[in-house]
Image 1: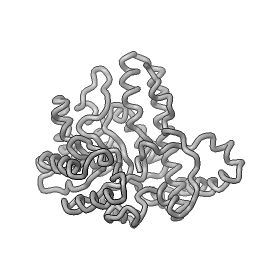
Image 2 (image 1 turned 60 degrees about the horizontal axis):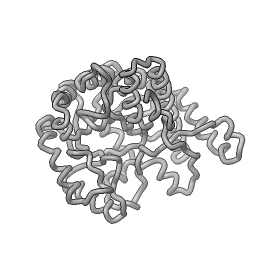
Image 3 (image 1 turned 45 degrees about the vertical axis):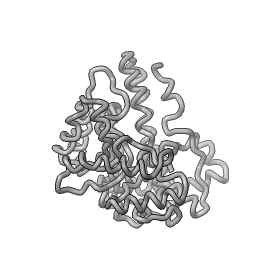
Image 4 (image 1 turned 135 degrees about the vertical axis):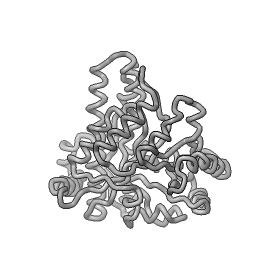
Length: 324
């Protein structure tokens, strides 16, 4: 299931008066209660970043090295611990100025892992071609991660195979190459803000940038509440969440504020390895598509529990229209 299609809740206060939405007040209230007591029971979250060394458009005067430097400074200041960066090696060929980003990431003590060489979509390509693309990324990982664990995989587009048979076959390929899958249980479509930001900065539209900043933080907070509500409904607890982010210019601009927002809401950052030790992520290590759900949304469906209506994207359709 692609998290690029996961969306937020709209007009909750109005809809809560209906019987359907009344069923959602309890888990969200539970989330608020947990947040108020986060000193005793922190919400664990692993940060992961896709599309290194280059993601989306850049505003004028900003380099890929600048983006990486700002992200890494924010990690340091927030004391996040290790943050996996999932790489597409082809970007060093497409954007020679991005060479150096991976070395910078490693020098700051953060690990790298595989996102395939060219960000190939498994659902629209043959398994053999996809496997070759996966393996093509490995020399670059071996170079930067010598002697350390880099055998984590993040599926491009979160596409795991368009049929159960292909899904299972891909899992066997992944296992044969010694990989573990990096799941995703928290996302707010952060990638959608990077191109509008570059356009608005090019136009010098400070007011529009302020709108982007506010909507980005709201989407992140809404998604945090949404997923925590699902986890409370399903398990009566917070699972350790794995947050999917992207190494974009607007992400870098917003990272100090984003990390503070999470911490203010009871989040304690942990490693990907620690998060994935939770039993919820057991499905990331199995081969069959039907063995267990890999997202909280799918877990709800598997238990026959209703999901609240969702808009097309956390940020709404207006992002694509901004600063055109």
